[in-house]
Image (cartoon, rainbow, N blue to C red; front, side, top):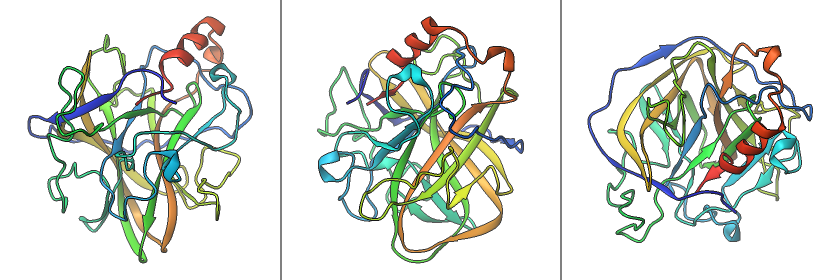
Length: 300
């Protein structure tokens, strides 16, 4: 079950300026040891979606089959390493928020955060006021995802109904720009020590689990091996929690060459990495690691 408080978002000002980063990064293979355990760069949290373009089963609740999975490679968390595991969320969470485009047109969307989405996000659904959701929903949540810093990522279910060509993938993350922010800390997407990754895994037939590749790389798609350019910008939505507020930013990977997804079930993830990996900071001590395990798994 979740650790921490529920979080949500409401509509705010117009989207901000676009930032572009062409630098790629690679996550380490699963080796049972943390690549980094550092806090000075802040923490990357992905945003969940609240729409169900392929039906409401499964949904975030494990009783339905579930749409959230996690994989980790750091003993500090206290969970089994290197094995995809199910995580229980609220039933009105669809999955990790994802928008797929082909030549600029949306071909998959489970969140409604884009201005050209067929069904726009409902500001009231995402509104969190004094611990209450006026429409009865639980709103959007956030999930820690850094494949080489405390080595933990989330992946979310999505289903493709027909062969779908994809020229760009967009995920969403929380960003405040405030180094004292209680959720993201000093995280800054423009920091040269931060890199980004995106991945898609096939589903293990009959088990609703991503395929285990022995790494944090997807077997269907990985930005580690597919040429393209990352960019990020403000969506104009806010994540509003009980004690802090962050902007909802989009992270887009524009592919140099399009890919085609065949009909089926897939799992999507995006994460931030520490790059280059400083060998002198491989271990920062068990005290810091224990602190991270308490407060950073996910907030849901």
